Image 1 (cartoon, rainbow, N blue to C red):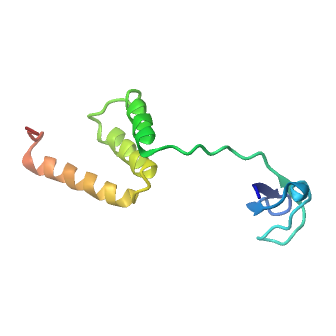
Image 2 (image 1 turned 180 degrees about the vertical axis):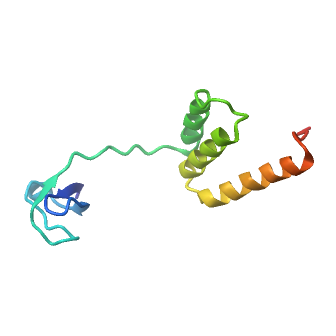
Image 3 (image 1 turned 135 degrees about the vertical axis):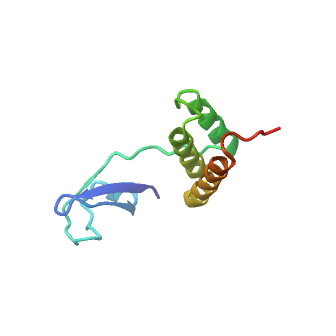
Length: 113
């Protein structure tokens, strides 16, 4: 059975329902307010991607990200990467902050060789 999205016309909440095709056009009761005044929405299509495809998409987006030496740009990119990899964004943020702190305390750039 497909999942359909609806919006309550009374409280404007958005909700999903698992319904048969014959029932999809009937107004569905809102789980938030109970009103049976809902309208079916057009849903976005989800595309399943492999981890390699997600990393390729992120690498492509880095070309247009801006200044890669800018901490704000890298922080945004790391958030996007952690979301794409389904990892905790706070953990990546902590790692990023630790790296910035160690660079500041050492007086500049670190040699990666």
